[in-house]
Length: 233
Image (tube, rainbow, N blue to C red; front, side, top):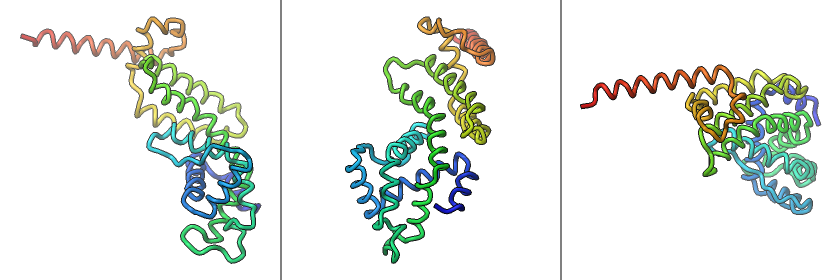
């Protein structure tokens, strides 16, 4: 383990850590020798979960990538110290992606505890968003449910301040979340929650800002309906 790898991890942000996680998964999936070593280690340790590359859905696929790394932490740590691993070979391997320098870089990341702390912390705080996305696939899912799933994520973000490992990244994580919320959130979520009798017991959890936005949407919709009534033949 070199001091430089630890220093690089401690200066990484959330997006950089996610990028490294994707590179690690890609390295083992796309290169025959490392993949073979990992397969053997997984089999010996009875780890059945494979490494997963990121798909199109940001939060859910990020969580899958990180979770696949966490589950395979021990197999990965065993693989990168084996003599056959490209990062340890004295002559290196010929072929794209199998040079010794690349293997050494992969080994350093895998053996750096700070990297794993970030992976686990980011996974923990992205999990509620991923669960909300998975819940949308249910036949019972409603817009009202979406409102409370977003609330659960916000409550999770509030805990960042008390998390020693993730506190330095609090602003970055909140910025990432706010960007996604602005992209996908609509006041109709809160309005649906307020109108759904099945969610009455949760009404006190809808914050004042969302209530105001929902009421403004009602006024807007009412005005649209009145205008349509006046212009209809």
